Length: 167
Image 1: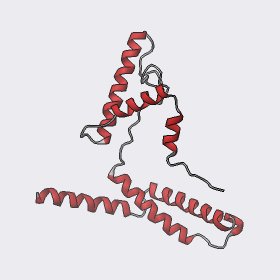
Image 2: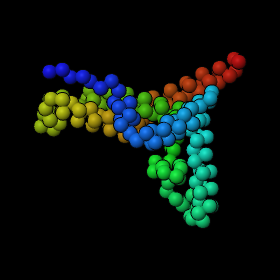
Image 3: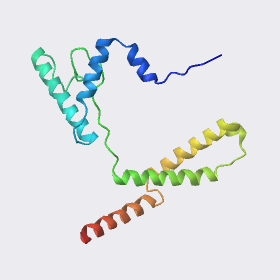
Image 4: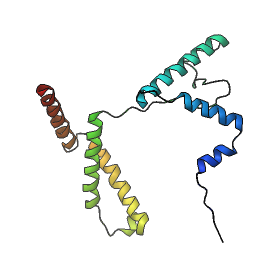
């Protein structure tokens, strides 16, 4: 029996789609191509354009303001969700997550290993044990933690100040 795997599932789906919808989606993707701007700036500008379109459509229709509508209208036949830009976490959040990971490793080594009654056997037991350790590490780091995040943040601030002073 010969099995021929599909070369690219996304392309197969695109080829099976309605040609008019395919051209419209391709045109929208081409319009999103940034010239030399970074991705976040491109997404911010597209979100601003969507808001302006939404405001104009609401004014033309005499309907509710876009601030009260749950979804911006991206075009005549679009039912897509509005564009959301995901911002990078701040440096304090990165250090807190690192501290949570360190605490997770500590907690996981402290949890009992031979407790099949509590966590289950085999891989499932290991997954539950790991998930418990992850949540405990996150909760411990949410408060004051053990000081790893604070120490890393202060040393990073000192490096930044030294770098600015040396420039």
